[in-house]
Image 1: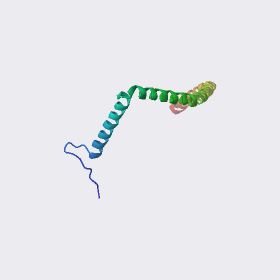
Image 2 (image 1 turned 30 degrees about the vertical axis):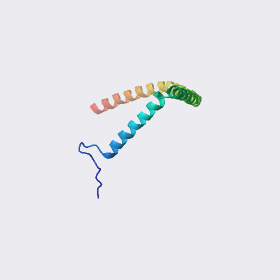
Image 3 (image 1 turned 120 degrees about the vertical axis):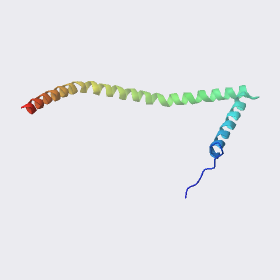
Length: 106
C-alpha cells in the first residue's frame, strides 16, 4: 500500500509549504529581535555571545592544530625517507621490464 502526499495544484507538497512558512516566521522573529525596539541591546548581547563562543573554539582548536602540524611533519619526514627507496624500486622495475621484453622477443 502506498501513501500519496497531499499536493496543491502547482505540485508543492503541504510539508514544503509548512517548512517555507516556518522559515519565514523564524526570519521575521530574528529581524524583530535584532532590528526591533530593543535591537541595539540584543545586538550587543549577540556580539558578546559570539565572542565567547569564538574564544572557546580557539582554546579547543589550538591543541588539535598543534597535533595536526606534528603529524604532518612526521608524514613529510616519512615520505622524504621513502623517496630514495621508491626511486630504486622504479629503476629495478624498469630494468625487469626491459629484460622481460627481450625474453619475449626471443
